[in-house]
Image 1 (cartoon, helix red, strand yellow):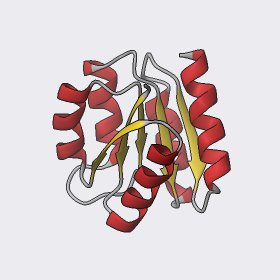
Image 2: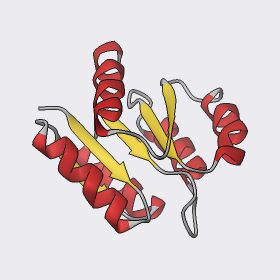
Image 3: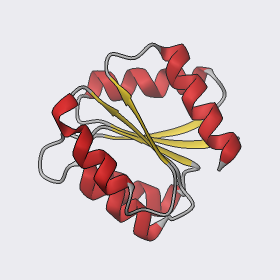
Image 4: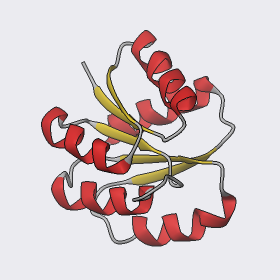
Length: 123
């Protein structure tokens, strides 16, 4: 079973994404902050990280760097509603070994599932 770590500070978004992926056969863990996500990732060793960028305290860009350093084989799918942060995401992605793809909110579940499936198949 493919392991997915969902990270978003908006609990409704994170919980909804978790439900979508569980119903589609993924083993999913959920975090509502970058700090908690890193702790979970160390134990859970996800096959893919799905993360938001704008979060309080440490943001998704910092989490991407941490995951890149600690789990270089874990692809990252960024899901963000802040278009003004896309340049920073692209710049950070260029410094990482693993693939990083970006989807913008709102995003249909079928699009998310398709992107995750493609990323996992090519990882």
